[in-house]
Length: 309
Image (cartoon, rainbow, N blue to C red; front, side, top):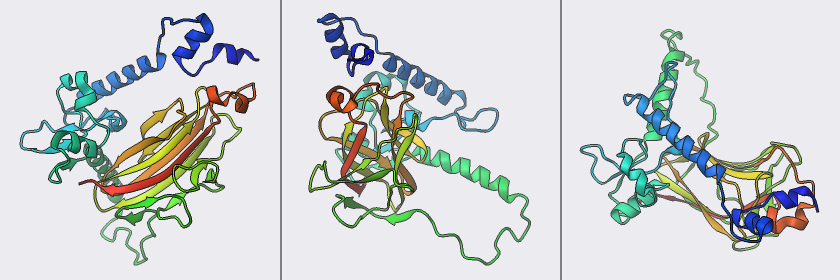
């Protein structure tokens, strides 16, 4: 056995039992760090209520920190939004008042009423940023602009109104496994049927393995997948990105299928499922210690995209 097996453990309970053979005091450094980041994001939201920009004109808002809640803006009745404009008291009961998606917000607040209005502040802010960039670029083009009569380039985003993906045969969604492939179809693990998709582990420190979807949606939607996460820090982590912003980070796996859910705004969306290596590799046979440290794999199955009602 190596020193890693004696001093690194997947949970605080295992650490206490193996080190002291009883319960002990635990200090969760990750939770403390996350609270600091949330506080910093909140302070950034308060810097400039008129747009949240710094001196360089860049947005100071990290939308990965924002959660969905009832709008507190006068006149916005029956509206769910992910803006940072809400009373600070909401954070005290965020389990009940702040939700991860617009769909859950409408469901919790209005019982899933189809008349619930969804206002995605993050998407609106992104469009403002992109519009400002576009104005700067177009300033020196003159009357003719850049229209040379040629056909516009084909979009990488695939129009989709919804659908299901079970990875059994022909794909129903435009999955990009990477080139060369970083993910693959796997027949050793499945939530239903016979297949799922999984990352191809890398032996390079800090390497990433990315599975991508580029979708053009007609309406606000939610993507759901079943996931089996068999990873463990400090060796690897699993992240979900939406339009370049982190929506979820998972550092420890579970020996069961669980739900993955991400809210999507109308229009173009890039969803990335990423497994990232740590800056060190186990000095022991990880497969022999898989129960404690995982295999470095993440499996996805039974994915679905459904418009929010």
